[in-house]
Image (cartoon, rainbow, N blue to C red; front, top):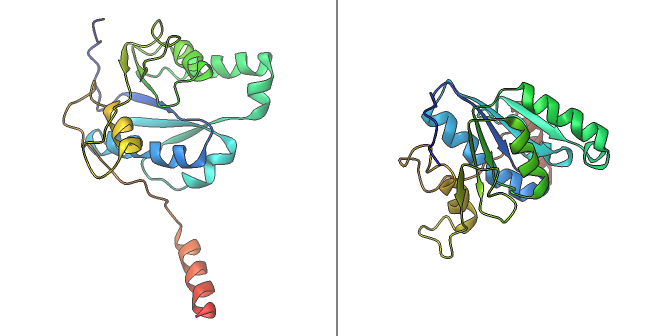
Length: 184
């Protein structure tokens, strides 16, 4: 399939990683990688509501798009959610989750470039498909390398590894210091 030529520096990206807290934190490295290379890009990160605390204050995420249990359980609310996704006018969707619900979100996005993992149900929706690497090439490990690999169709010069980070506010850091100074 011919990949559309997009102005990646100013594109609007949607990264999809639902469910597990650790997966969401690990996938947040994609937001960082995109913003480092394309500072003017808009990066939205779609996650489940219970995972928000691990990405709060992340300077590389412009907007958190929240999937709730209510949306997942109600066809009407899901349809309304999909309509909101469509209105966002994303240019690039990167589906790290690559489950049927996230592929549906990718399809509704109408983004000119949709990237995800190769599954029997994703092949008709996504423009760029990747298979999971069988062995790591770096010390970062497969979880990070497989995520960073999804960026290769955008630009082959992305790093192979970044480390996920939790961003704390000054208040949280100060509170933790006070707490631990009393315990020592």
